[in-house]
Amino acid sequence: MTVRGPFGFRINPPVFWISVIIVIAFVIATLLTHDYVDEIFVAVRSYIAEKMGWYYIILVNLFVLFCIYLVFGPFKNVRIGGKGARTEFTYWQWFAMLFNAGIGLALMFYSLTETISHFAAPPPIEGLSDHPAQLAFGLTFLHWGI
Image 1 (cartoon, rainbow, N blue to C red):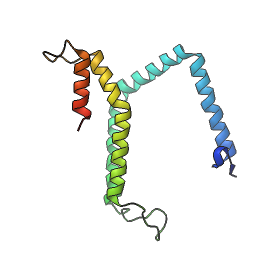
Image 2: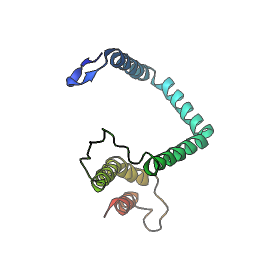
Image 3: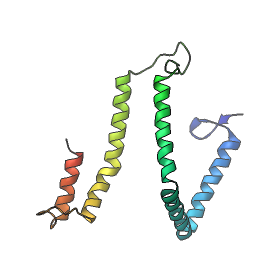
Image 4: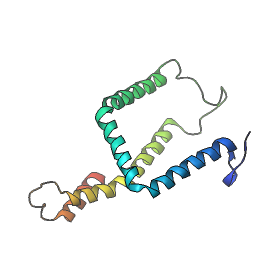
């Protein structure tokens, strides 16, 4: 059973509202017990990094191999949408859109973060270590410039 939800989207009410309640409960619990939740998140992240890092690396490599299998294996000619479905964009257009989305995301988030991190902990470059702001912007322009 689907109905029109907020903004005109079709939703399944039990799934939608249960999910909304769970998300809001987690957000409220996190805001009310920030220090306790922070300790839990740090402990979980540390455990995953120390004990499960190898598993994560293997899983990512298996996923990449699975994607390569899908591209070159027996499923390479399967059309999503049926036999008569045609693509709206060429491969080059898709590549350009994905490339630009990735670069745009990196520029929006990491370019500023990189400048701040180089300013906070400047690498030991002789002659520029005395001017951390100049060094930080110089390295950022080197990495993100043309």
